[in-house]
Image (cartoon, rainbow, N blue to C red):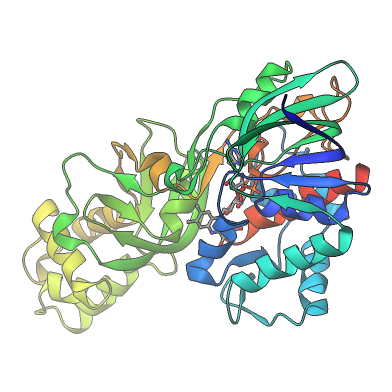
Length: 393
Ligand code: FDA
């Protein structure tokens, strides 16, 4: 006979959202994870320093089939609330760029902070635990699991789905939250990899891999300005990760290599002053030299500045400010920072994250169809949604 215990709340997934939820939920709370340590994505994020929130976080920084859904939780547990929590635990941080806050020391400080808050709330954490099945008798949920080589059954009034999305299966990401949501009749929107590098089957950028340049990238009417990085397999860098969340297969991306200046006016002025200078040399004073070599080959550029008519210069500058390309695809879940789509927000209360049709069932964090931009927004959603559910329980 399997061991049997009863809990007020069982949270599946000890990541960012699950741990935050466990710091808030009253009564007896058990947090389960198949990993050997909690918060593994927190630990590796931001190069080990975790970009834990963004000073400018607002609902506009999130993608969802219902862009209004995230508003309630984000406004009730804000970036300032998380910053206050960090201050209470004496964790030093700094702004890197664009409102992105990182730990001065280590992302592990955040995991330790959440664990200490969980301990204070009396929550129990079981790691290395396999979730075998979940059932519902109309009032309570039962969770069957295997731990320390033994199968056990738990009964709980509240069940929280916090197992995240499908990004980086090597780190233990699974579709468990989606499967359980479907089991209880909750719709799940199509999922795809987000914040992910682009690939090109012809490896066209291999010769210039490693070159970086600030650009404006546009796809599906959305534009971001940040650094682009050419890679062996395609395009990366913050701007490409951002735009990947808006990109759909076979769509073009437009790249403006001069987001802050008008190269036409610059080159025309130089033609007037120093017409005998070589066109590609002049371009190389405005763009990385290896990129200019690549463009010279692709666009057959040659001659002195004086050889270029106004219309030739205009044509060249238009091409450099609207460089169109269609990626073959993306690196996919293997390297994606997030999963777009997920548990349909129509199925959930935006205030409590509880399923409208299944009392006591909650979904939080990345498992829900709310995805943030690059820059600390995804952790903020994990904190806000986890807090909202924890408060409601
Ligand atoms: P999260 O993935 O954190 O946690 C889910 C938990 O569920 C995990 O502990 C997992 O082991 C467990 N689990 C999954 N399946 C299970 C199963 N079948 N059984 C038992 N347990 C299971 N965001 C940001 O804002 N700033 C940043 O700097 C970064 N950086 C970053 C870097 C990298 C490399 C990645 C992959 C992602 C980021 N992110 C980020 C995104 C951020 O990590 C992510 O959005 C949050 O961790 C989501 O929090 P959740 O708690 O929802 O899921």
